[in-house]
Image (cartoon, rainbow, N blue to C red; front, side):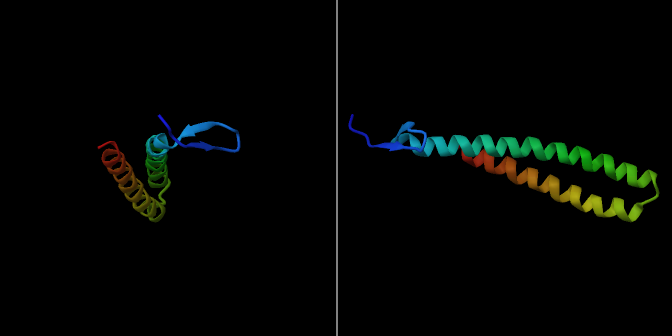
Length: 87
């Protein structure tokens, strides 16, 4: 098998045919991390909405509801990206 080798600054050698799969794996890991991370933000935003309502800051709670909606939408896009990446 005569495959070209890529060399990084650390002198690690990676066969070129594996380059694409490594990028895909890295993207999958990155998207999974971002999804999990953003789910934590969703929980925090929900807590802040409740705190703002309890404090009578309904206008702030209303704005945070918009942020919550968008954060959940982002999670849907992360999930869909992971789904199509795996197929």
